[in-house]
Image 1: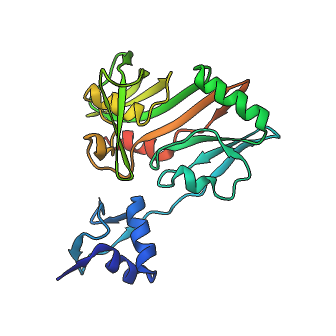
Image 2: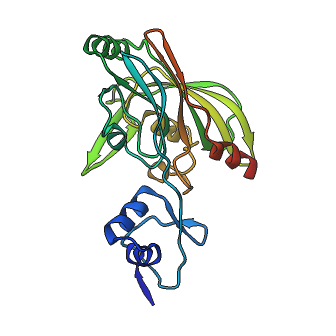
Image 3: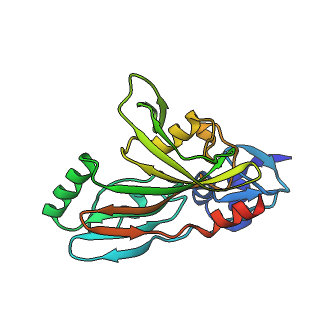
Length: 245
């Protein structure tokens, strides 16, 4: 016998169907060691679920101009913004963790936006990718973004906007590589699209052709602007992932 995954999870956890669906949609639910991808997908009624805990955002730094927060994976930028009495400065994808910035002063906000526009912001990420990357390289390929419903998808295209990404290998193990990624531009899904374009998609990024994993293995590690420098340490799951392989 089978039933919809979210209904079975709701019974097991003693929660509402809506809450169960939300956990699955976030990518926090596993059965038999595999992530449940579809809340409405049919699954054996005897299935046992494991629910990963959703981390909470943590404050990195705050003064009268800026607030730096460590965004956990599986949470949208919009959700992190709720209850924050400051203006959002940029965004991170739902499964991307790391430094997220808010401004608290209107004049500073204008200066920060200008710094982003003028490419005066240093943005460094850590990613675990499929394949072996052993040499540093720069990807200078324009990106075009298409919106389908609520989903965005980016790809390299001559008709796209300028996008520049610098890749530096940190280590490789088996069929995976850990890399440092520095971006000069901030196009939608830029890192994900650029890494796919060189046939080394980010582990967990099924939207861009990678194998399924606990999450998209991309972390916003460092950001520097207007004299401020913020760091979010590499997540433990990144270190464990490379050790496992």
